[in-house]
Length: 314
Image (cartoon, rainbow, N blue to C red; front, side):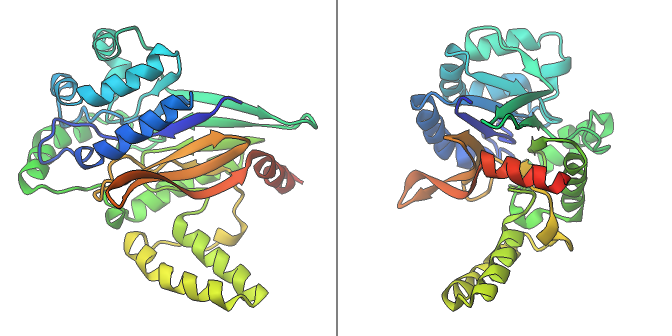
């Protein structure tokens, strides 16, 4: 399978107080340079542009640098653009093809989802279904009132007060519930892995970072590894500040659901999903000593992932 990078939920705006992407732009541009140089295929998984709070003309004007970098993928026929709820315009505006041609210099198709197939020597395979994840969410799935409220009430207020709503600290039970719905759907399918965005909460192997820490702590206790236990105990309070919800059955979840997180964290960090070298990885790009740096947060081999999914079926 070709190397693939998946980013979602940039919410590129017009560089005003409500533009949550602005602080992340430097990390994002560095990431695009890295993946283009390595000839990755780029799946942009929705809510890439913030078109509830901004006009398309404002977004085009203030994001020229990012569109130029993305255009390098378009020039290689290596970009797949999926729409979300905040950039639904790409799917339903008759002028969308003209705007896209203006952005990228050539025609770009828009998709509601994409399926990747990974096949192994023994003939077994898994299908990786990538979509934004707003489908079925009554507050987001083409809801006209929500769009009106964000455009005319919340957007200007957010800009005036300089509020960033996309911090992990603001993830509430509704986002947890939505992740649960995505997991339950994926776990009920045969040989399917689901990758979404939408919630801005990174998920890997169906687990949030906090849940993975608790699981690693249980394993360390079983091994009598006190050094690892101490390190995890120092990390858990910080992660609880970001996201304090833990699913009751997190130790037995089927590893079928992944979430790319977002490209609009308030500290400038962006997260995404890589599929390359036989692995699937949750990655983040953050500044280390002032330099945008790629960090592998989690990884597992696709063969191991397929084996775990098949084992849950028997």
